[in-house]
Length: 317
Image 1: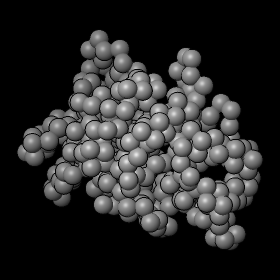
Image 2: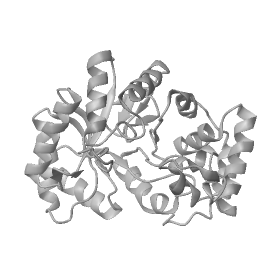
Image 3: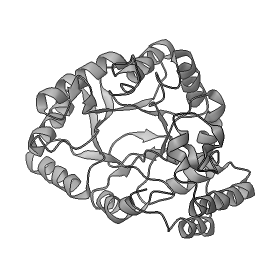
């Protein structure tokens, strides 16, 4: 088990991403994936109130609704559920009133009494940060949220949030959710990890498998005729440098009897302050590799090899 920052949340070191629920995985497929994840030892689920509002016919909250129905059906013990606020079409931004209403709506969809980990999804600089920090603090004080976290915030804004929370005596964030993986390293390693180390925050990276590129499935910029929503996002990494990363992952993984995806997740888990990479599964068949990535321990030389081969990564990739 792994502790999330300074919180009391002890979790299996992998988070199941709920972004596909209600999008590329319907209710039944989502239930099957959630069952397989928990049956395999997983206990940390990540979603957001906006998932999946981008799908024609959806209005936002579909992922939370599916997870809530699954929770009601299965009643699993010891599960940690994280969700986020600021992007739902009906609850945009981080004003105090909006944060409160969005949290209450998420609680209703999830069918829980409190949200274990509640993220500010994207920074909203149109609202004074003091107002947002206070709103999150009030949710904790009122028992609607157990722990506060931030996602997609700059290092300076995280420091400012921490300072306001300390000065005003409200709950401080315990986690940061950045875009971080073997082909997107620079920005996080140069600015976000130092902040996490300074304040004892846990990193819960998203895009851990680079839209599927780090599974080894996409080895061509042509996407090999694949038409999934992830194919185009993954294909941009299929350069000579990117494919050298895949080759190194394949070779190291083979020595452990592990897949490229599991090896990539194991590298990410070994980075400073990382507590649980987020990875999603559209089908039950994809779940075992994710779980394996939470258990695989790489040697120092193997980590160094992957560090070296991925040093090319541009911050904007």
